[in-house]
Image 1 (spheres, one colour):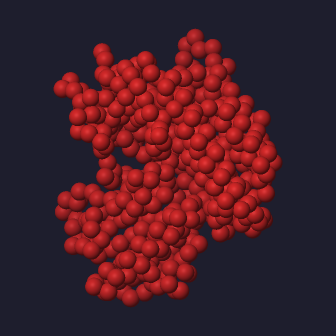
Image 2: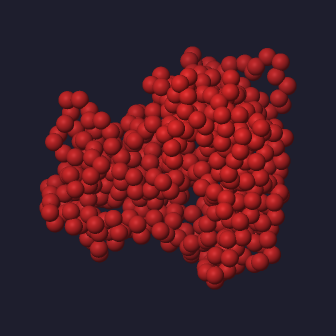
Image 3: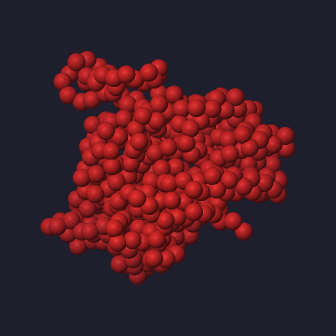
Length: 497
C-alpha cells in the first residue's frame, strides 16, 4: 500500500484543533489566560496569530490547557461539515469547564461566527461572544462586555480591514516557515463556497506592510514565507510610487516593471507578479510560496516572475474542482475546461519543472457519469503532483444550496471519490518516482516525524524530503539532497555537496 499522506499547506489536518501558545509579553500581564483553538485553512491559523497579538497587548497570556483559561476562543471553519460538528462538540465540552469556572468567557471566532451566531448564543447557549473575521480589533471591548454580564456579538464585515499594521505573533512556530496574509475576503462567488459570505469582499494589503513583515521575518531567522489569500492572483494595490526598470536584456514579452517604494512620481498599481518580485528581492535565501491561485486570474506575467527568481518556488496550487465545462459553469468558476488546460499548458511551457496540485469535488449537483469522467481525464492530462479531494457537501447559505438540489446519491459520490483518490495516488507516485536520481534543494524544517535520526524539509516543488541528520547542517539551512527512492508522498535521499 503506497503512502498517500499528501502535503497540504492549505488545510493541514494535523493542525486541526491545535491550541496556540506564545511567550508572555514582558510587563503586560493582566493575570488572565487565553486559550485559542483553530480549525480550517491556513488563513484561520494566521488569523489566530492576529488575535493573539491583539490580546497579548492587553496583557493576556496563552495556555495550552483550556482548564486553566479565563477566556476560550475557537477559530472556526465553515468550509467542511465535519469541522462544524467538531467545533460544536468542543463547545459542549467547554460548557462543563464553565460550570467549574462561572467567570470563564467562551467565544467563537471566524467563518462560522456570522451564520451560527443565533444558534450558538441564544438557542444552544454554548458561547458568550461571537466575533467575525473583520472584528478582531474589537475583542478587548467585547470581552469587557461579557465580563459585565452581557452577551457580545460583532460579525460585521469590512471593506477596508486588512490588519496590515498588526505584527502577528508566530504561534507554535518552528522559526523557519511563516504564513503572511496579503489580502482578505473573496469576490469570486463559487456556488459551493461560503467564503464570500463569511470573510466579505476582497481587499489587498499595502505592499509596503507585506514587504516589511517578510523582511522582519527573514531578519528573525525565518527562511520561507507563504503569501496567503483566497485568490492571490487578484491581489491589487494602487498607490503613488515610481517604478524600477526591467532587467536588462530581458526578452520576456510579459515581464512587467518592478514597483518600488519612495519618491512620489504618480500613481501605479502593484499586482501579484509585482508583489512576488518585491518579496523575492528581500534576500535570495528567503523562499517564497503562495496559496491559492485561481485559474481565471493566473497570468503569464506571474509565471515569468516565478521562472525569473530561483527563490520563488516552482509549485502552484491551481484548483480545478471539475474537468467538465457544464459543471464548472454551475459551480460559477468563470472558466471552462479549455481555459484551464490553457493555463496548465502555460505553466508547463514557462516553468517546465513546476509541480502542480489541485482541488477536486466529486458528485456536484446533477453531475453525470460522463461529466465525472471528464474530471478523470483532466487528471490524466495534468498528472497532478498532489490533490485535495472531496465529495460535494452542501453548505447552508451558498448559492448552490439555494439554486440546486443535492441530488447525487451518497454511494455514487463515494464511488467517484474513491476513483479520483486512486487515480491521484497513481500520479503522485509517478511524479515522485520521476525525482529519483535528481538533486533537490531542501530547506531543513526539523526532525522527521518518525525518527530523530532523520531530518525533513520541503523541496522547491513542495515535496517532503527525508534524509539523515548530519553534523554540518541544521534546521533553517539549505542542503542539496540526492533522491534515492520515494513513496507517493515522500522523497528519501542523502545530502551531497
